[in-house]
Image (cartoon, rainbow, N blue to C red; front, side, top):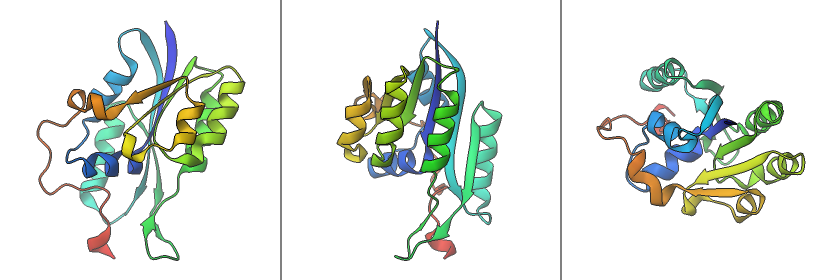
Length: 176
């Protein structure tokens, strides 16, 4: 059985799905990515947090209680005024650390910053799969992958059936 680890760039995935008009059911997404023929060694979820956001805190508690290792970082304002938490270093470091423990790394992100770490992992013999929406997928990421999982065509498999009407764990605008 193929061993795999899944690394989800939470902000990237959340905003991509929201732009397409739906919320992600993370349990269904994980099930879809790993299938029945793989042994999941680790599922990691990376996100920026606003400590004053109760809904986000509840969401992250749910993620931890449902099998995800959550890596979080405080959201900070950039020079351009946008609030974000850059987690590329954390995700890349964790992918490198797990590469010797798994056969396949599955990255859920389209962020171009992952191209170099993914190419290094591939050169070391790790199978690389990248999952994301076409609208948020950098071509450099696709060039590094052994397999691309097109989330646009599979969204019905992991779309949340009863999304929270007012739940937006990544919208920090009202707290600026």
